[in-house]
Length: 110
Image (cartoon, rainbow, N blue to C red):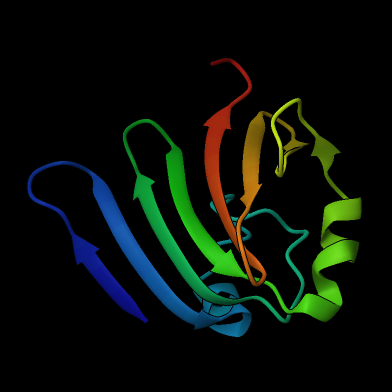
């Protein structure tokens, strides 16, 4: 796991090689990642803004789990873009190539 504090802002960058490392750092419990990611998720990159509770990043989902993951999401009007909401948190996922998924986390109030 790599954690980098960026300057004076409350933005924190994280890198996790796999789902288990992110889980051990309680990112799902803290709400930075949605509880629907499959355990095959790897290469997790997160940039969390602690002031605004916003986040962006990416991860890779194994091809065998990708369709099951997408089935849990709501398609948006944009190509390859999906939405997931849990309480006040809203994640927008963009499917890239070879199982790579980028995301943005915002609040429903925004």
